[in-house]
Image 1 (tube, rainbow, N blue to C red):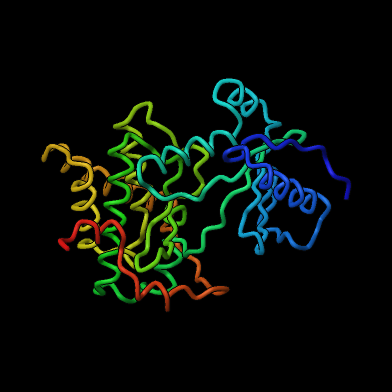
Image 2: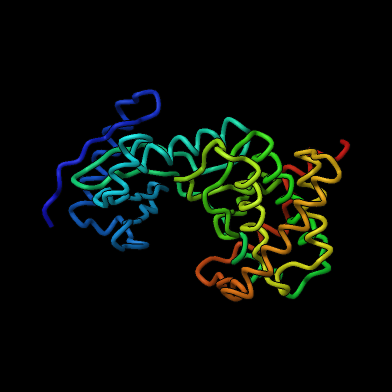
Length: 282
């Protein structure tokens, strides 16, 4: 397999030892070294993981004309992912660290921290689908409301806030909810419209995944983290439910995928939610 010429751009603190390590890892990747395990490949992206280094490689095809135009005005998709990630981190939200960015012919790429955790929708499918009355599941939706509320309170919008773009990540004695796929995460252009879209996206849980009471818990905590006038809060909530039902009628209910390769539940069930714990009196 011939290696394309590649260039590393962003490296934290311009650390030469990191640059050498990532350069070697990229040479391994492009030569087909089995240390890299391919996760996904299509016309838009290639994603691979290096388990020993604990990092992902993700490329973004910039051949399409629309992407070339976007790159001219807002930078390539790798730079946009880095910018969106930094926005979240500055707001106190969790997202996988972008360890390096770069490019090779017709593609941008990132090297990204591989967070160890369970995608939210798949975790509910695997561990909590049959436990709608459990305190752990109720607290999970409270934590979700606080996390998304914090993000929106900082004027940040996620480009695709589906359930599996939120990951439950163990963090010492707590768990945190991390946002992934941050290519389109940014400061909002039209906040009200984009806020409503995000709320619809994150509430696309069918009735086997979320109860009406759990929806209420989500919104109670969302508005706790991001206060709204009472009437505006009620309108947002009602419109979200209406848009979710329209989506289900049009496209059907989104189904989670059982997590079979790793069982996170023995660890997760012992942990308490990070944001919710911070709200509780010590």
